[in-house]
Image (cartoon, rainbow, N blue to C red; front, side, top):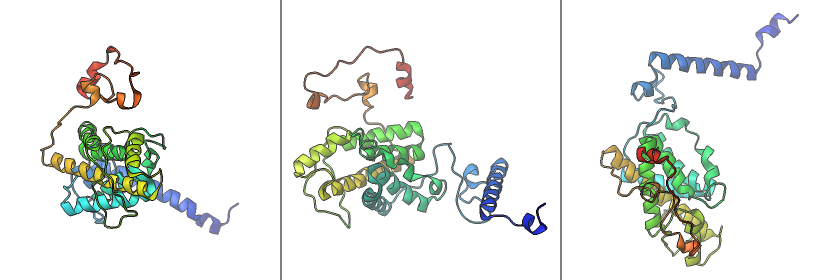
Length: 278
C-alpha cells in the first residue's frame, strides 16, 4: 500500500502532463465562451495581457500593413535566415517574424521550421524554388487560400521575369556581381543560369549569397502585394498557366527540351475545378 507521502508526490513529468491537459481544457472553455481575442476579433486574448490569439485553421489571419522599414527588416531576416534553413524557411521566417511583432497571435504559434524541407525545390530535388513556396504559405495565411494563390501567382511572375537578385543586405556574406532572369520558377534552372553567368559552382559562397538575397527579393515582393491586398488594391495581372494553357505548364519548354516537348492533351472533364480556382 502506498504511503501517504508518496500519494502526495507527483513527478515533474506527470505535473507537466496534467498542466497541459488543464491548459487545453481552459482553451476549449474560453473558445466556447468567445473569450479568446482572435475568435472575437480583439487583439487581447485574456486579462493576462499577453496579446496572443489561438492558432486556428480558419483563414485569413489578422494582418497589419508593413511599412518600408518593416519590409526591409523582413528582407534582411530572410537573407540571414537562408544560411540557417535555406529558401522556404528564409522567406517564411522573414515575413512571419515581423508579423509576430506587429500582430502577435496566431503567428507566434506558427511552426515555421516545419517547412524547411521545401528547400532547393523540395528536399533538394530542384523543383519549384523554395522561396515561392514560402511566399505562398505566407500569402495564404494572410489572404486565405484563393487570394493567397492569386498573390503567389504574381510573385512567381515577378520571380520569372525580373533580373534578380536586387536586394542588397547590410551584411552580405559574399560579393556577387551578377543578376539574371530565370524565365521560370524552377529552382535548378534559376540557380543554374545565375551560376553560369557568375562563373561559380553550387554551394559556393557566391551562390549561397545570391539565394539569400533572392529570398529577400521574394519576401519583399510578397509583402508589397499583401499591402495592396490590405488596401483592396490587389488585382490579378495574368492568370496562371493552368488557366490559360489548359495544363500546368509553361510556354518556354523548348529552352530545355528542344523539339521533343509533348503536346497538351485534350481536356479530361475536370475543367470546372480550374474555373472556380480550386
